[in-house]
Image (cartoon, rainbow, N blue to C red):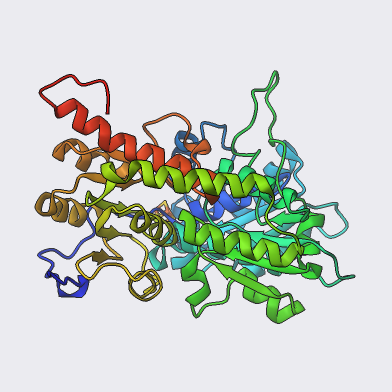
Length: 457
Ligand code: SF4
């Protein structure tokens, strides 16, 4: 058996070629777009916010009002305080938001802008005026990926807003970077258990709105400031993502635990039967109720589908790539359905993915795991491995095209298909959707390549 570990690979180049990650303030912007009546403000050059808006519009197909402090050469040398002042005043005038969420960029972090001080001084200069809440997440992209930005923004929100109060029966849910449809599905599940939940944050509506007759500067929906404040008096926090549970740095869930004594339940993304079972078990324990019959039936249908589809999936070589926690969740599921995961790839560098895949998921010994890597390295490995299927975001499409293998699009970004905001990944229902897509992609490839135009399986 061929045992491969990624640190044995010998790179023949030094630079990143087609990064398998996105910039940190983009991750922060997704979180901030899930706060009600909030305008994200990118503290840096116009190019950063344009890139972020372009990426998010293309994925979510929604207008993306994300402001910029619009650094010029002068700001890049002397600091962006004056630009910040102008930007905040413009935002207040144009949007009248309840809050402004500031994310730093590579440039503002490099020149050393002290954002806490800049915000404090802005408030002091405008004392007596009715100002929106202004808060800040440090998101230098050279230090991490969009997921680091996502988690830093989530942490900054609870640090800024959560306060102690009378204990409630609410649950804080930190779903991670999932689709708006996943958030909708999770909300329904929690409601069916009779649990009141605060999603931190909730971009189900803000990133997937119905059509409007007139343009709204600020889309409806999102987690309200009152909900964020009540995070400090919740009954428990549920944090999804196995790398989060293992990482040394503080997470939103650990902060609430240390600051307010709120119990934290750490789970993997509920993809596949094993991880979904763990999720439903946690809800049973939180609610004191058994899983509703609807979900027992969903689980049963999923098991039935696994059996029906086994002959199409078993032994097929799969390459999985994307955010570390998504890769871990997907691999756990793919192992259940008999796919042979030959390569796992992420641009993330938490250092946890490899260990979790080996120890928690007990991935096969021949599976190659590449973290902190790029698409070119993935392409090189794929040319050698010749997988049957790719599972990941649309940035891997060129590899799928070159090698003529199907790509099942999951995660972020999906720039070349409709419905990215409605891709379901989580719980039995999301797994069922993924299972059908993956199995049908393999069947379609076989059918297309068959010399016989068969119509029955
Ligand atoms: S310069 Fe940094 S913050 Fe700006 S878009 Fe590029 S990676 Fe993101």
